[in-house]
Amino acid sequence: MAVDAVLLESPTMRARVVERVEVLDRVKALALLPDGMHVTTQGVAAYFGVDETVIKAMVFDHRQELTANGYRVVSGVQLGYFKQLSGIQSRARSLALFTRRAVLNAAMLLRDSEVARQVRCHLLDVEETARREAVEKPPAPPVENPPEGSVDAAVARMAESVVRKVIGTAVVPLLNVLAAEVGRNSSKLDAVADRVDRLARMVLDDDAKAIARRRVRLMRALDEGADEDLDELLG
Image (cartoon, rainbow, N blue to C red; front, side):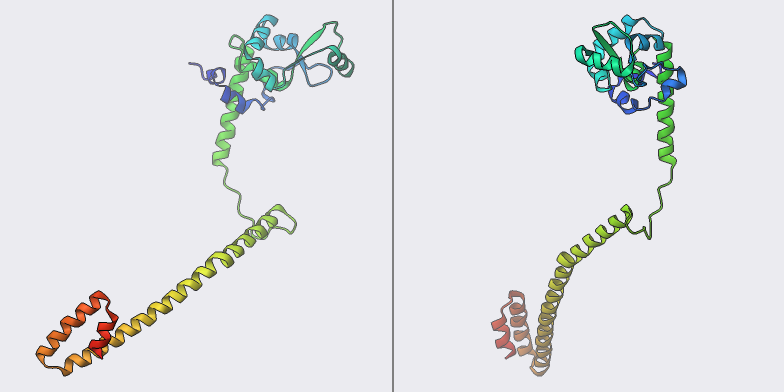
């Protein structure tokens, strides 16, 4: 399959590159109407070197896509105004108009035009070059001291305000809670250490049997968390 076929087959790809109208003039000069903005069906056919019926058939098959890119038909009062503004001379009751984007869109739809094929190839080259430059281009260095009144300065102030708010409303209260919890745990540890110290002194003063009995009862009380039994044993 030809490389340019991706544009013939993919509406998504066509939408990505349809703004690159400058490639039209790289292949061939596009003759615009006196308003400098539009081309008639006859002009589009001449640019691509095909018969007008080919252009009309393409419009019939892809009218919605072409309309989204500037194609339209004027008639009646609108046609009268357009003739006056553009200086075009025509007795037709309606006139099909293509913008440069619509012409580029046509280049991505016409299969049997050498000019259209060349336009597609240029489009793919431009897109590949832009993609490669985007990948290879180094990121812009951060602005350390953005000038006052600039967008960077406004963003920096906003970021600082958000950080201060988060610290004040979330971090500081959390640290206060943790500090209080650490204080309570420290008091409990001190109480346990005191009881153990008292236990050690008492054990050293008792004979072997009393030590064994008290040790069993104390360990059981400690395991069960029975503060009243501990107080009684440590008396």
